[in-house]
Image (cartoon, rainbow, N blue to C red; front, top):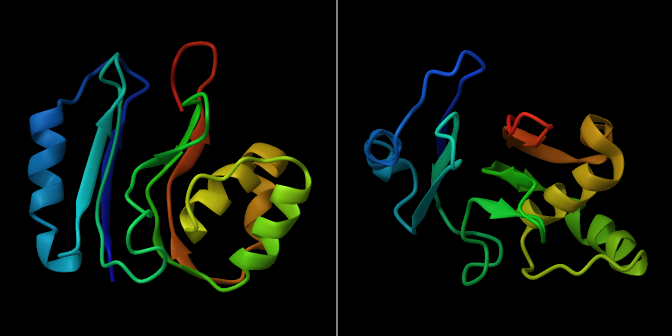
Length: 137
């Protein structure tokens, strides 16, 4: 089982990459196959994860973002119906770069917003969102 961590601030309090990377490293036992961290340029949002690679071992490194970087995700779990959802997204012209269930969630979120969770079959935990005008997720 992977480990996810992060921070979010509406008040203007900022986090830092070293703080987030330290939190992520403390989860190393939850995901020995890799990890990743991202902090927004304004320091108000951070996402990190440790990965136990099961699906798309080579290409599923997280956090994963959409093409323009406005939707990002760290994810723990497995989406059992991601291949069906992936085919639907590809039929609509969505260019997926990996074969991971995680990236499928990003693009499904772009299409359907928070309602996308109603279509996911599996077990999961993830923060996901879009950047609004003020740069917050």
